[in-house]
Image (cartoon, rainbow, N blue to C red; front, top):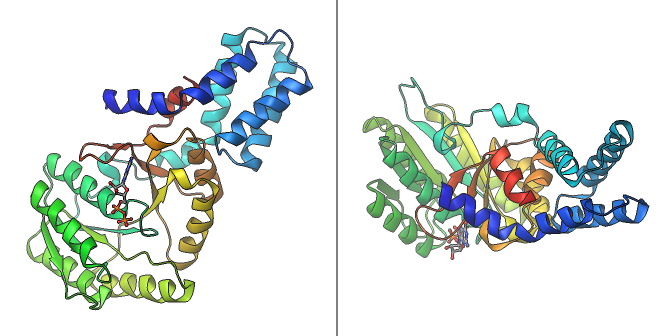
Length: 305
Ligand code: GDP
């Protein structure tokens, strides 16, 4: 975790430096505030949250008469944390983003998102975290449209010690998902992770498909978590995708991947605000250990450098 934090801090370094330089100016005039606003926008925090944040910060500075860069940094930190709504943060955010304490049947997690965002990798990494935590996991390769995706998931399964249920190429994704849950129940597994297809070429197609997968899975009991995987490097585009998915299925958590590859970590704030869904996991690399639970405080500290 320490290593991951260091990596996150490195990738977000430029934002922190930029902000701190601005806050260190002798006079916080309109121009400086505007530059602070621009810096936050560049980090993909989003227009609404940025304006709100800067307004609140200005107001507090005015009321408190705060001046030193350290005090300003502390205020900014506080305001950023406010933006990462703590009530969202408290929602089911346990190790690995899955809470299945005391459940008799496996927790069922559907992993959804556009192809290429890191869905399969995240599913694999999550399986690894859970297995390392002593839980038994069954994987469902419900992306039947890409044989490579099922192969990739199966490789993860073999690597971490989780059985992978897959169907024939081009087969019905919902029946693979159903089968995976059935196996999970039969084997009294703790968690079933269902990797779904993410072709976004037609919204209706996706809707029908994902909706159907969920309905079919629910025949055996409720879905505990629908985890939407978003690629942080796609910035505001990711938000557009997120909205489409949110129309199809109720998203309960976000896994934000590739934060190691962007200085635009502010997207975490934007996503959480826009969707009203907590970011639960962050991907910080391609390796098996590069997945961490999202911790607002550590994140904001990394953001501010
Ligand atoms: P899917 O199509 O959504 O299932 O995407 P994949 O899981 O196949 O991932 C697409 C690419 O993104 C692969 O090359 C992954 O190794 C890479 N990837 C996934 N997560 C991360 C991450 O957190 N950081 C980085 N740098 N790469 C990632």
